[in-house]
Length: 159
Image: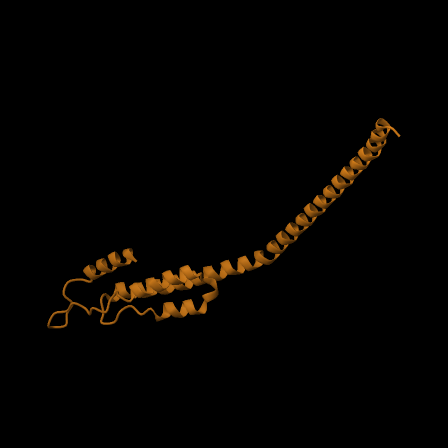
């Protein structure tokens, strides 16, 4: 055998083998990629279906419960502040125990941030009142409640 025929035989068998290996590798890689894409797509569809099915009802319930809490809490705040405005400054500060009870009945519907802000609000509200009415020697109120109400409004704006 001479060199040219040896090179021709080698190239004749090596090139088709290399091309065959490249084709097999390309096909297997593309098959693996398609399978990964299909699995990812199926997983995403499953997650979306679960999210929609599970959270749509849960989100509705959580929202409804949060709104219910807000309405109860607002009603109690309104009632307490209305009593303060009507009665004016009294010996007793505004009672916030009812606010706390409402928060304790609905802890699942409050985030930590909201709960913290409500605690801060309740601490500040207890500072309203408790000064005692401004009365003269006969027990009659001096002046109107207007000044104490204005102070209370200014104080609440800070809260």
